[in-house]
Length: 209
Image (cartoon, rainbow, N blue to C red; front, top):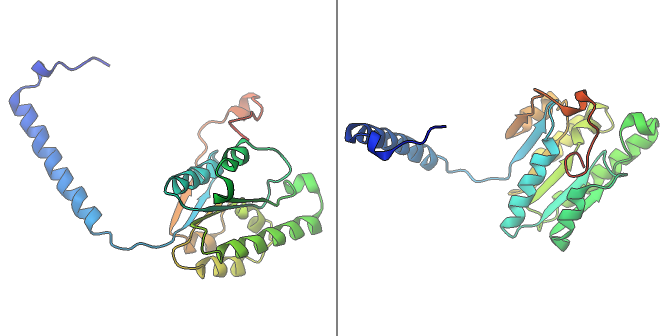
């Protein structure tokens, strides 16, 4: 990109830009001032694209930056080592981490076992939702457990809606159920434009796990 010489910007251009930005600032300030509600959010990261769990852990890191406490319950992942678990371990008891999954359903090939694991993970999620010291709770791959009907969708959504005031909850995983999407405050659909897996690149430490 060519560098802009300050001398090539005449006073009229500079004034037009200043006036335009002043109007934009006024609009932005008014919009921000109009937002008066502060509440715990139910956030859903879904879609076929990469980054759903990564985004959730980004929020967890942000919350930790404010000195808050974070909980993580993993509904599917659990058997394999991940870099993020080691990284969050550096925060000590400010991060409560429960990797309770048995692996994906095609790995376990045992429906009863999958359901039992999901129910145990959900019981832990309920426990953490009642813990007043937790400010943000990540329910990683809960959408997968709901997709395969390992848990009762209506009961899960009702519990999430009835969570204690001020608690932020992030649910990740593909194929979020419409009932959960309707209940959520923020839903982000991760799109898939291009993925290195299709070119034969395997999962790599620091990128996928």
